[in-house]
Amino acid sequence: MVNKALLGIAAVVLLVVFGLGLGVGILVGGSGGGGAADASPQTDDASGSSDSTDTTTPTASDSTRTATPTASDSTGTATPGAADDEPKTVPLYRFNKQNISEAVVENINAVREEEGLQPLASTGTTAENVRQMATSHSEAMADAGQVKHSINGVTSSDRYKRDGLYNTCGFQVESYVENADHNELEVIGRTYAGEEYPDGDTKAFNKNDTAVANALTEGWLSTSTSRERLLPANADHIGVGITITTTRNVYATVNIC
Image 1 (cartoon, one colour):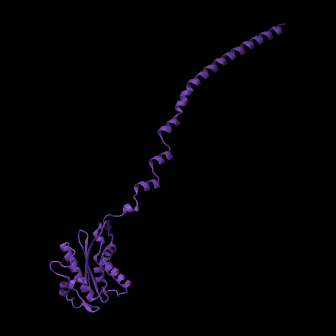
Image 2: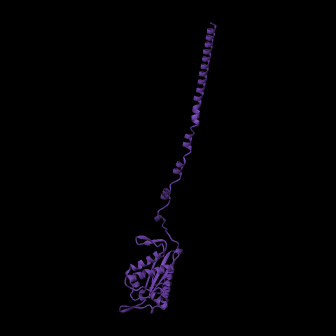
Image 3: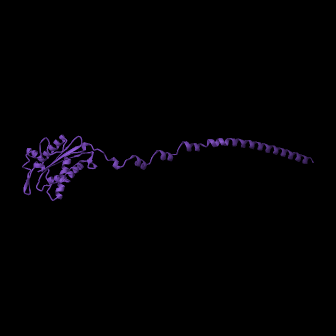
């Protein structure tokens, strides 16, 4: 009987203890869950640094795309084409009178050979005397700023006589002797070096010695009078005098002998 009573009392005590423990557990669990809920939004805001990074600090690839153009884009917009790079003027020191003179001789002799004529000699004593005479007249034209056979009353015939070439440079042409009278052994001209100049309805530009020589000879060979004077069948020598002024004018004289 006593044992049963003791067992009953023990059961009651266990029930009371169990009940109290369950209540405490519920209260503790509810309090902890509320604190976590209040703190989690702050944690989300703080951990939102990824959004902040996206808006304030671009990635390396984005920075490269927006700040550094590609090589092709840079070339296309910053580097002009070859035509734009063509210089509008060429320094005068790049032009050489002797080179131009020699190129003119080559051009004339090339045409003579095409016509079945012997080339004219530009070396030797006679040719050098003819060249000096031609040069003196080109210098006189440059000083006067005119392209004329007669400067200060001195004609082409006068120059041949003055330099002892009048008789030396006469040669047989069919039934008569060709000589320096009436400018028959001389052609003259002018072009420009290293800058644009009017050429009919267009503009021309002689960028080097060869271009200057070509401009001169093409002009002479395109007119019947000058062409005839450069292509006599029995001539032997040629002298070309070139003068270049500081204003880029190129004066030229060709004398035949």
